[in-house]
Amino acid sequence: MNVNAFCEIPQIMMVDGRNVENIVRVVRTIERAFDSMNAINRTSAEPYYVQLARILETQIKNGLYKVGDRMPGETELCRSFDLARSTVRETLRSLEQQRLIKMVPRRGAFVSDPNENQWKLQVTQGFLETEAHSPDSTINTAVVRAGFEVLPSFATAALALAEGENGFVLERVRHIDGKAAMHSTNYLPGDVGGLLLGKPVLQGAASLNQTLRTVGFSIFAARREVAAVAAPANIAKELGLAKGAPVLLIQSTSRNENGRAFDFYRSFVRSDVVTISVDAEASKETAFGDGDASL
Image 1 (cartoon, rainbow, N blue to C red):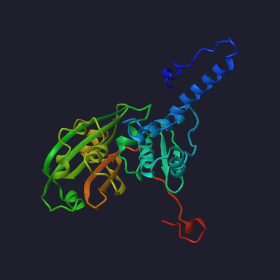
Image 2: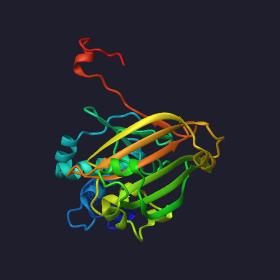
Image 3: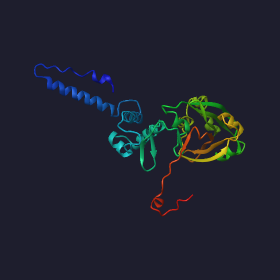
């Protein structure tokens, strides 16, 4: 609460029978102070979604919503704060990136446990975004290489580029609390990679997904595949494992709203350090026993 809001509270003086009037003034001042904490400031230059995110974050941290509680839905938030649905969605996306909430398809937003080491593959955020805000974990990123080079054939195929075409490669190793957790290599078309030059992400100080969004490339759709593999020698060395040790290989192609593939990555993940989270939800047919649930 803004302490300055109470500086205008008048003293209650028990003289001339005016104490009732002073009490009313005090109550109204306090009410205005509380209202200001839970209202959107229309005159502020701060974006509305940032203001709403701060309000909801305060409510979560103050215990109004506890871990596992369902947050108000989009429609309710739009009505309560007189905001556009796109603004509310940006707010929820921001809170999810901070790991304060988790979005469950067709069910809504729920307060999450920030201490879980999970990377949820269904969401469009990357590993750094979903982990970096955990209060009990420290994540460090070491950039192994970053620059323009001829892309391997599997990358050009994923990005719908000509074989042998130049592109941008970003190779990184992520550590959680000092323990190697993941080795990632991103392959991007040359024009997209050029937008990263001079950005903190190339020093391991920012999220690639967030950086790409700021330059106009947001993930509209992505296909991610997971397989258990034996760690190649170079990967095993970076992750502090023996050659051939079991790791998870995650491959992903990200597309923008126009369907253009602008990022392909391969990540080798130590599942003893990071839990890969995948939510499953039954279809209506399966839920009522009319579908085939076998794999």
